[in-house]
Length: 273
Image 1: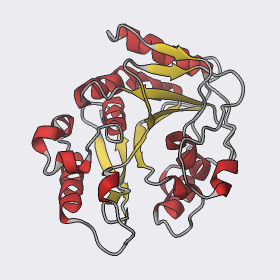
Image 2 (image 1 turned 180 degrees about the vertical axis):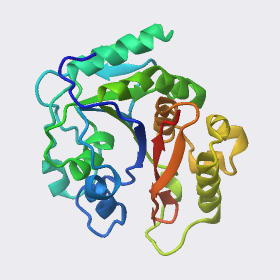
Image 3 (image 1 turned 135 degrees about the vertical axis):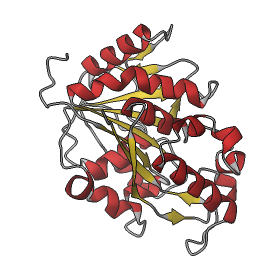
């Protein structure tokens, strides 16, 4: 057990749809007050460390960032308002957690797990975290996704990391329940029928515990390729479900839409015995 960890065991993991980077400054986005009230209304416990699996870090093999001192804030987006590039989230790194993640994955049969000693936090991590934990005083580590692998690979990654919950580590998958930038429009008043159908399928599958269907969403889900032309924003969900455990209970903790096809559906997964 990591010596710096003091809090008792956690039972929950989360999947947060972070949507647009403008979530960091735009009060009109419904997901913003949800995240701002996260500690008050959703999860009052303060974790010892946070492990974020972000859609915005893709590697061919699993990688963790091993940072001593504060994490750099990566502004990995283009053409947005200038104030967004001045935002900082200097949460401390979590090098002990990073080493533990690597060890657990290697013990579970993942042959290569890389250490990145320079990379900070991308916007898939710091944008939601700056709303959820604005003090930036909880150590944060990131784990990458592998778009050359399938959803089941990411579920197995989560299963390998499930024991971290016992050490007070909050595991958060950060992506988007739907993510097709080419179909997005300026309207927030209507939702594309295909996006709604995929989103409803996902909600029903998760709330009824059909995780195996979600692991094979490309065959099982309606309009899977439209909802996720590339899988990087969906794979963090599979890590979160895997880390919660085989019979985890899913709860929809937020739901909103913007831009015609962008779902901000977010879920809590609670380990059951």
